[in-house]
Image (tube, rainbow, N blue to C red; front, side, top):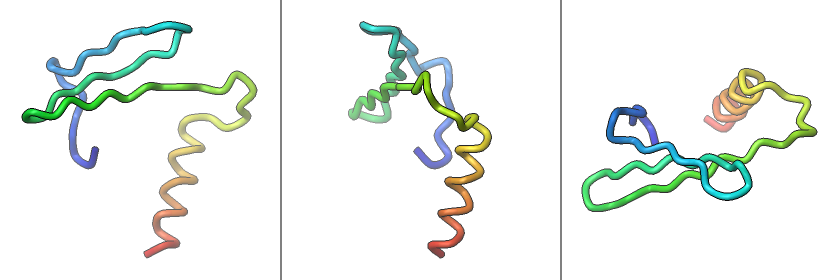
Length: 60
């Protein structure tokens, strides 16, 4: 998604089983992103983002 921002044209809906999804239309393409969160997870979102950034930097 790069520099894309969640704007007023992004639709957030909650389909079955409480898994929210984001719907974003860019041009003639509609992107649907479903969000799943583990109830047993030990890592915060902040920790996960930091880990992902560190991994990305190590691959450079």
